[in-house]
Image (cartoon, rainbow, N blue to C red; front, side, top):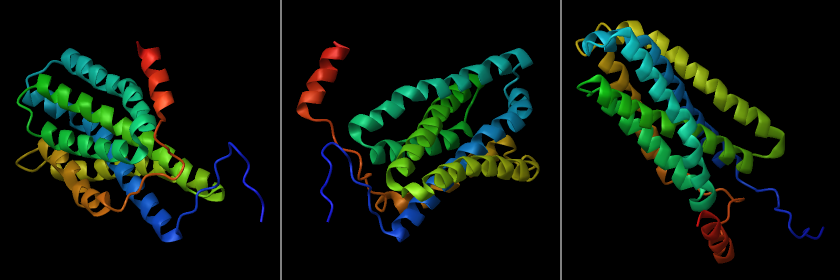
Length: 217
């Protein structure tokens, strides 16, 4: 039996069944991210008409919402301190609640706030989800798993484009597209207690916490 090399983290071992469930869950979450990004572009003319917003105002709105992509950097960093699991699940809850909340916007301003925060959590979900797969999947499947996750985002966009002509004709119009974004909730509830912390993550030691605290100070 080979001796462990100091400072080197052993390859994590997970049951294949768990890894399949992990991949399915992260793929499903990322698919809804792709869905939400696309329906914003499709529904924008209807949103502008509903809120009596000019094309210039809508342009500014999309720009502000997109800033959430950059701001996600700060949330992803929390996964190093508090763990991958809690940040990932919190992000999925955040973007699900805020996507549904967008359907109940009373004006362009609160719609932008909801969507900015939703985008913040969505990008965090993608980033932390990729980290989880990189830490949990065996080396031979790691690249394929991460690639599949990003492909599911594109599939979610395709799903949004497919549903758009049907949902936009309902009494709720564009709002029904955002209500449909809450469909991830049953999947989230199913996997909430099944998702485990990655084996490679470890909480920061007291010495590391003091060091980071001094750097922030």
